[in-house]
Amino acid sequence: MVNKALIALGIFSSIALSFPTYTVKPLPDKPPEPPDNPTTPEKVELGKFLYFDPRLSGDGSTSCATCHDPNHAWGKRQVFSPAYPGNKHFRNSPTILNAAYNLFMFWDGRTKGLEEQAKKPIESPFEMNLTHDLMVERIKKIPKYVEMFKKAFPDEEDPITVENVVKAIAAFERTIVCNDSPFDLYMRGDKTAMTEKQIKGLQLFIGKAGCVQCHNGPNFTDEKLHITGVPKNKLEDDTLVAITRNFVVRTAGLNPKEIDRDLGAYFSTKDPKLKGAFKTPSLRNVALTPPYMHNGVFKTLDEVIEFYNKGGGDVENKSPLLRPLNLTQDEKEALKAFLEALTCKTIPYVEEPELPPYEGEE
Image (tube, rainbow, N blue to C red; front, side, top):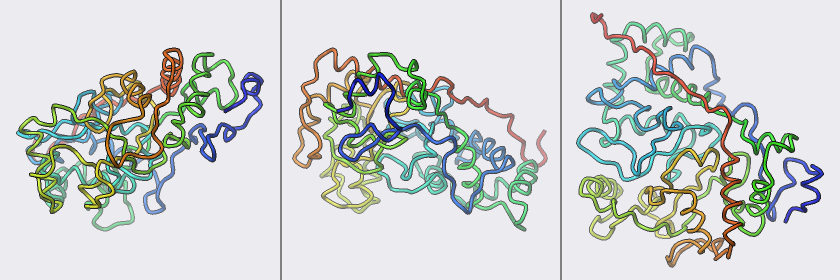
């Protein structure tokens, strides 16, 4: 437990707040980027257009922004992510805000990095439903994009490729970051940035509640898979939701008759030990992105806190890190106040650009 006197005096470094060997600290000014995709203004500008362009979907109705909406803190404030027309998704939309700091993507952590992640929804039949080859052919018939790709990738003879599409989108997403939350300011030395209640919540977070065991590091995630026993959402039984889940289950070579809910990483790994395992989400800006969990089963932070206060769900293979916390009402309110202190003061917002026409169109 962090000494209150030390907090009051401000005598600690960004790595002094710890639960065993776990730490919490402010975000770096800039997220990491892969060596083969350095950020440039031209690439970011191209990525912005592609991010908002529904022509990257089969029927021209769905863009990246459909599910990761700047008006919804770059997520989607509904139980399940939007889906390609005629379908329903079975998972909640994570925000891309500060996703640039994540190592692994999706609720099941099945891809590494923004570039690899950006590929998946485009060709998913229930998300954007467009083959990569057809996407490239479409882009080549948009003169403005031909020009923008040449500027963004000047050393390539034929720059309009699937790899460069996702590189541009990823470069744009790396600009959707913020690190001016009360917590960040407090940890950088402004001892007035957090209230006494929020400081108490921070102490609980790293102490009695032990949240830091999974939600650690600058982005408040250990990037690992955990089984917490999140309860089933009754909306998972919706016919179209179940159809989408069953499609994913069959594609994985599993039997839909034996599965009535989302089992997370089990679908992509077929490892029985990962039944019900999901990636630890970042808690940054969490107050802006309800509902919560992979299936949107909790509407409020109060419900999430109460779930963990009781020790998580009732499943046999639950993480041993979970246990009843016996938090008082005042402690739960303080913990919530700290989570709210992870909200940036300035959330980046981007207006949808005017998209360029196809060749021959005005």
